[in-house]
Image (cartoon, rainbow, N blue to C red; front, side, top):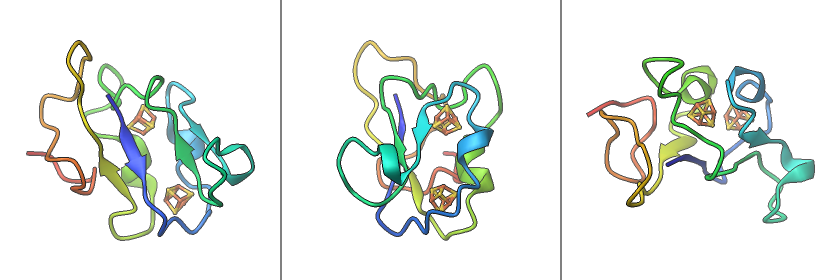
Length: 92
Ligand code: SF4
Ligand code: SF4
């Protein structure tokens, strides 16, 4: 379960300290090599058990930079997650 940061990320850093499980790394630690922040999908819990909605997306100043990603079988995912690619500020 995870949310995903798109390449419109402006590297502002607003999201990283909001994550309750330290799933976000900055551009210098992005394992893909892209110069944007990154969410480790195996660490992100979609804020389930911590907040009603993804705290990173709530904190992000961009329009839809942080989106819902795939929810794979066996993972506990947010009960109101929207389709992958939808801004994670939206609940469905
Ligand atoms: S959705 Fe929550 S757990 Fe996942 S990266 Fe964002 S703040 Fe962290
Ligand atoms: S808050 Fe949004 S724009 Fe800022 S670093 Fe995080 S994902 Fe990128």
